[in-house]
Length: 100
Image 1: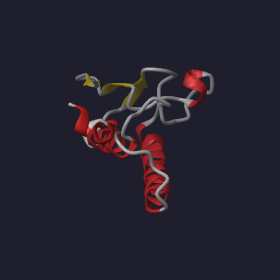
Image 2: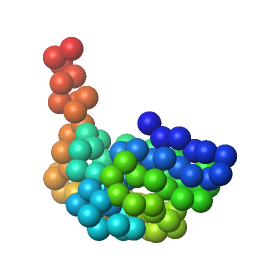
Image 3: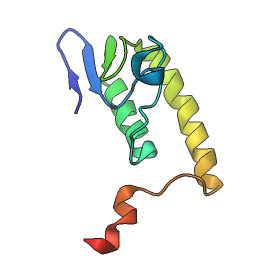
Image 4: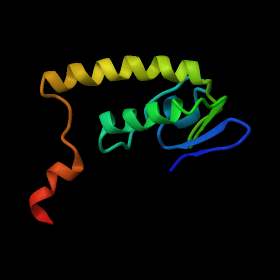
């Protein structure tokens, strides 16, 4: 869950982190526990489209939105290449679809 305040602070939760879960501040990074990284990037893009002034990740220091946008573009390209090569892990929903 993410929350955008009237002051422009986006409390982004686990949509974004900083490397080593906060040990390297101010650098956007992907949290290591996403089940569907492409869907998570889409959610992060939707949050960025709201025009936040600052992002507060669940792990790490405050992030600048422009820096996060650049990271999103790079990560999208990387994931698309992985998906094309068959290396992107299937969604958890897909893994258990027949078990429900």
